[in-house]
Amino acid sequence: MTANICVSVKPKTISEALTLIEKAETVQADLIEVRLDQMESPKFGDLSASTSIPLIATIKRLNKGGSFTGTPMQSRQTLLDAAKNGFQYVDLDLTSLKLKEQVRELNELNVKTIVSFHKFDGAFSTQEMQRILSEEMNSGADVCKIVGTAKQVQDNLTVLNFVSKVAVKTRLVCFCMGEQGRISRLLSPVFGAFFTFAALEHGSETALGQISINDMREAYSLLRQ
Image (cartoon, rainbow, N blue to C red; front, side, top):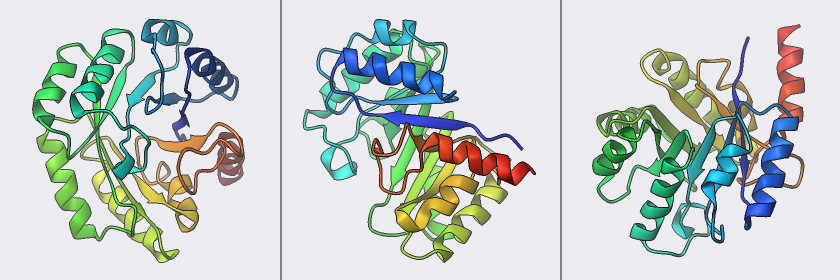
């Protein structure tokens, strides 16, 4: 069993970003998501040159669980700059303005797009996830990402069943946030998800319910026994 783990980090400065990327390399992350919500004067070339691990650039607005307060154009330009300077993936929200245009623009730079949709107040039904997936695939996404919030343990079962049926059709990242969603965070790659997210270490979580990468690796090791 293999499970790709993406460590998510949220630095404020280049120096902090370089330190966090180095730590992510030490714990052998498969991908590193760099949250650019609060990043000051990012030098993307320095970041991409510091590691051989694929980097994902993303910006989350206040209403999407992040802290970015700039304009959509500023967000778009920052992500484009990251793409031009060595980032292999850019994560775009499904509700982004001119989404298809942005996807084409990034593809022309040979950068892969992750098109994502989050729900912070509850879990998705299977029908909702299917509709969202269709919209994301129609946008031209290389990776489709659908993340709800578990309110009860059973919500994980709906997500994992969906992943097991859909992951053969497209690269899919799909799990539940929240304390009740840890099961799907851990098991979604077992059911076919492209990757899952982890915190670099305890106390550095960028989303509710994240598990540290070391704890996830230990759990996967036990599952293989």
